[in-house]
Length: 288
Image (cartoon, helix red, strand yellow):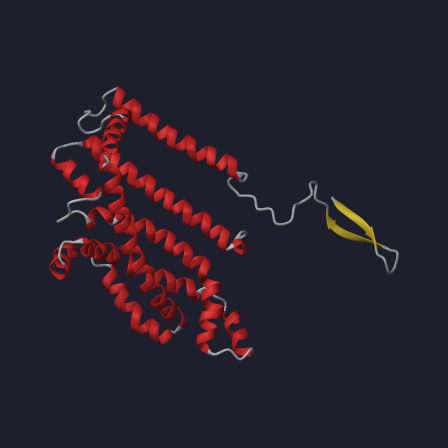
């Protein structure tokens, strides 16, 4: 259907193009696979998803589709976690492991941020840094466990080093990629204003790339948690990874599954804290 409008200068009718049957809201995004979920519906759907997973697990355990020795029921796992919490063992292991993860992660981040920033801003430095990083990051971290013991011993420094190795090299590449997404016009504007290269890098490039860098940190924090068991696999006397390894020797699958679930919960909480913090810090990227 074509709508006719009157030209304001000539008074003659003119075509205004096809008329829309429904008004269109500016800035409203509609997914091609269905309508968007509001926050309340999203949270409810996520909770139902977890409930469905627990229901399937409970059904399999009650029907004994898998030997209880290998797949205990949720109640058995919960009871074992309760015993560990009552004795204080669970809280001690959580505190030790959290300390190790965050120390290794913070050390890796503190080193990766400036290196990735420079590699992303300079082609020459990129040529120096990225081939070496690409080469090392494909080496399995597990293979370095014996070497790290020889280098730094078996105390917490060895655990920090394993977690650092599992996150640092990936962080450098992700930070440098984030820096390269900054439009060249931003840097040209800084040059027009007479800013030096260092000031352009610190006052324009780094703030502009910070939302993507924050996402990279959030992703690599998850990787740091996955390297925890490897870090506590050998020559450890405490921590969640150590407890899982000990439980394996005695076929204590309820302890193994319980600790794995706790690790997942801690990781999920950390991820959500960083996600919410990112939304607060970078409100201007809401429509990205």
